[in-house]
Length: 223
Image 1 (cartoon, rainbow, N blue to C red):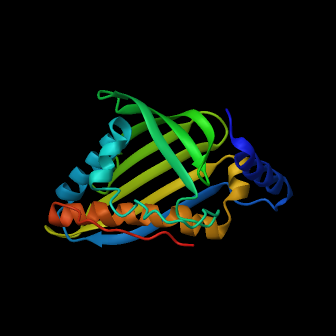
Image 2 (tube, helix red, strand yellow; image 1 turned 180 degrees about the horizontal axis):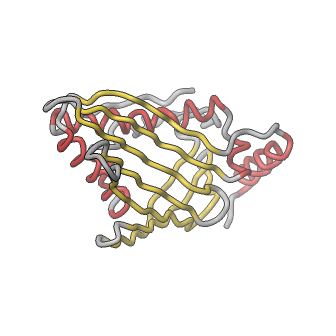
């Protein structure tokens, strides 16, 4: 893999910083409790759609669930606090509809430089309910990664009807980073580059359940 002088300098500086910085948490998560103004069947349908496309055709999510995650390109240099500091670029995809498992090949970019090539993201989706009750329904998609850059991830939507037109939602989206990348993820980097994305995804899922669509939204890059 060829980086060029600037790429090598960035990688060297970041790896050196990783060994010098105090340990940062490897697991980061977004947890939100809210209410969707739509029947349970509608938000469940949207949740199933999100998990299927995440596993089988992740590029399709940019048409609705990932709206607002695209960046406005500027001439400003990327920093580790930039919203686009860390990016995953999807490549090959394999999906088993019966087992609801998927495998996606990704390249991982940090500050615009490809750090890792052909990392594999394996996923498994299950929908469960309590043994002695009808609700809540829990949609849980787990993700595991090859290599050491990322360890695993979890997407959880726990759904319970409040009425014929309202659904209580408990939402979790978590990532466990490898030791090198976790040293790079400060609280500010997590907030600016990653956390807001998971919050936007939930906003879009709810909007789709409530209105049947997701309106375009553009967010600018933070310095």
